Amino acid sequence: MKKIGFIDYYLNEWHALNYPEMIASIQNEFDGEFRITHAYAEIDHPNMSTDEYCKKYNVIRCSSIDEICHECDCLILLYPDDPERKCEVIKKVLSFGKPVFVDKTFVNSYEEAKEVFECAKKYNTPMFTSSSLRYSIELKELPNDLTSLFIVAPSVHLKDYWVHPLEMLVSKMGVGAKKVKHLVSGNHHILQIKYENKDALIVMAEMGFAQDFFVSGNGQNGQNLKRCTSPYFVNEMRDVLRFFKEKTPSFDYQQTLEIMRIRDLALLEKYDEWLEL
Image (cartoon, rainbow, N blue to C red; front, side, top):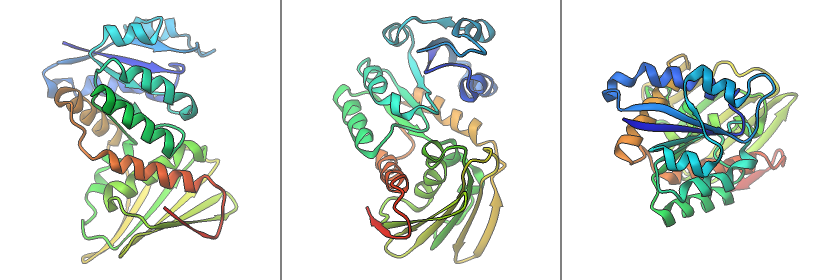
């Protein structure tokens, strides 16, 4: 059995509360090889302490990052709403050389992302990061000859949620974006992304609830507007377990760097002007 450890700022958050059931639901696909056995959090959440979480999910509480990295074979580093806290934590975890999946948002900037990938290379540690929306079946079913892509995305906070439509964008259109333009209309943020011979448009509704994503792509066979209703979180966990088994990400890390670079530009609050990558 391979032991998986959760590392988080606090454990009473959606990902830590739901990933155990998702991973359990696909255990048979991996012959029961993986099990969540340990957890570590920096602080207690007022509505559920780390001890309460560990009791509920039948895992062992670790008192430090060193302890959980020593005890576990694979690590899932969460911190979904605290990207500004993650860079130093990730680098410490990478030093143990064990496969690491880092949940969204990766880190707080493109420069930090480069630093983390360099650290992974230094320690020869398998690592990848992704938004779950990369694993939307509706996105994958769009044609590969897209000349344009349209994405509608919800957002609670832009710093945390830009990663989702940008992950969808880069996973489908690839790297090579040339420039972006950011427009604002009320709580709606519109990001236009230009490539050499194609482009994309993202509409993000800020300060709402994290609900549905929509995608549409123009190719030789026309366009489709699709609501993303497939189990993309479970699909993501399936790829995470595959990664833990094979120790090879399913896509190139340059895609993540492109996502982070575009995110940096989107967060600059420079509106109605083209910004080059």
